Image (cartoon, rainbow, N blue to C red; front, side, top):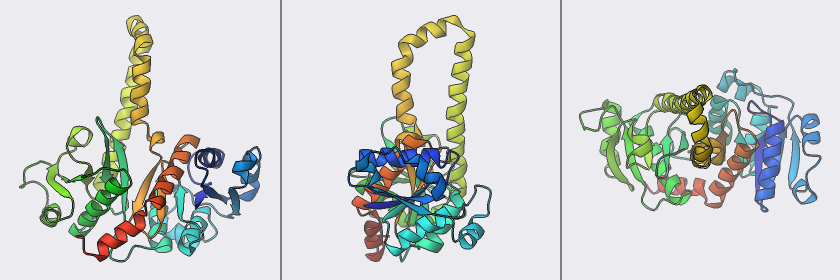
Length: 333
């Protein structure tokens, strides 16, 4: 299996992205990675790879890079020699079965639509983030691919999220909910209400509305919202986690007893941090396009890149695109 990695995308590129590719190839013997980026910078970074890994790495030179502050649709159209654009063209041509980038989110979404192309019948793609919660993983979709959503978009997000949870993350009976400002049916706007009426007849167990507080501890496996709301919610959750961590360190630095107690709490805290560490889950799938397109966190280091490559590999092996395409063709919703 060949996956195309935009090694120039992200805050820590290309050193960490290349190192992540080495880790992924070491972890998955069936994986080959096309390292798409500035060849002169990439080659020294993989020079120490073992022979078994080196033969599965392929450097694809790219003369341009799409930066984080560029207008997404303009950049993906105009920078045809960029690492992201070339990686996506490899997916479109069938040369690669998926692509991964930690770069500009908007450009990844634009490229997914304009270069890779949408699955026939899908109105707009959705970015689905697997979120670690108290008892299991949950998916929040959409988190930024489609900023303003129609009822049809929310319905299709629910379908794609449910399929991903069932077939890729092995949740036997994924429960789907709409994010609203209350659990009562009188809550939400007309868009959410229209989506609710359709989802009641859908192929997955629909449990109605949930509030933001229910995402970490509630009954839903898939929480559906528009991309504007989802993106803000995701950023708030990330910021809150960082704030709690910073406050804990500050309090411990000022007091003696917490420092002593920390010796006994350290194993528990490490396990807790692992459960909520985005590097363990790697990437966010752009669902609804004709290929495995995975968005890694912009701050990803090598372990997160390796995990993102693993996410793409699983999506390909479990035929995620075909599953979504078949469900849409058969009128799943």
